[in-house]
Length: 353
Ligand SMILES: Nc1ncnc2c1ncn2[C@@H]1O[C@H](COP(=O)(O)OP(=O)(O)OP(=O)(O)O)[C@@H](O)[C@H]1O
Ligand SMILES: [Mg+2]
Image 1 (cartoon, helix red, strand yellow):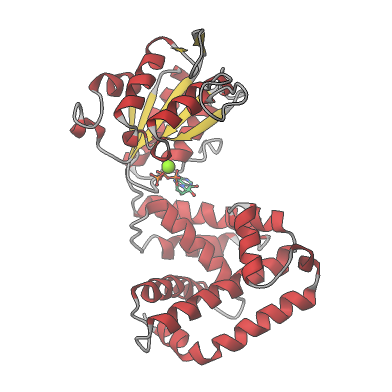
Image 2: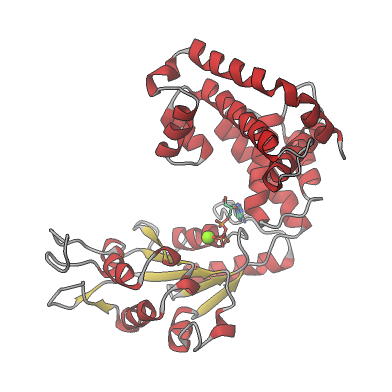
């Protein structure tokens, strides 16, 4: 198995996607990656870049859904000083910054019509005009694009056919993972998360987890599987079997969903939602205790630093308090006490099969 590709495939359909990606890596043409949410389009795009002749240069990502047409033009092609109010200095766009490398246009299906026209011009010959500029520029950038929409079905109505054909020199379909994909994915994700949490996992446990995880349906595909495996690490303990911990991890998710839908044990949405939030805070504090560093927390949780700081602030913990075991312990104790009345609800759900 070629482990230099992070995209994991076992089923025939996903292996085919990987084969196409290998061809794409060697070819340097534009690539369109399509597939449902959480199937692995981002990871495949990055893999293609890493295995292309451009690997030593950058791959930059632009989320097309997040940009208005005007913003898109300036973000992509840059602007000169005075191009608009507030443009106090010239700024290069993504295209220039990624020169020699690749540009990953995520959620390309959401690109407004005006921006589609601008992109088409660039794709045709690699030339572009910075906003407000008086000189045409050129950049050698490889375009990788992804969408979970069926662009071909909306051609000419929502997506320009000429742009579609330019982008999709090679189209790679990433299907949702099947059971056999899930088994391998869960195993690999478990090893990866174990390393991140510095919580070693034996090959046998990872393999048992893979078997259990492959029996579940994930609407959010690999993303949801990853969350489930991560939750497994939060609830796993030496006095539980792998199966018990897995059940607890699934129950935790169920709990959150029930809380969100307002179907908690006593039908009191407010109470249950709060209890679940507290449980989440307790799990967060467990991570805090292990790391004692906001930066490390941000890395482990795969969330931004401001997010980590806001969670700490919510619990009344200042950045300097991270060094104080007492403060963290007292915050945990307070939450544990507030959760006590909800014990029976948690146990009831944990015991449901
Ligand atoms: N084949 C894979 N191997 C390892 N991890 C994967 C794989 N596919 C997806 N993942 C993991 O699942 C999560 C979602 O993957 P990714 O972001 O690539 O999905 P996506 O198809 O781009 O979804 P969306 O359409 O919602 O953007 C990521 O955390 C990624 O690391
Ligand atoms: Mg994506």
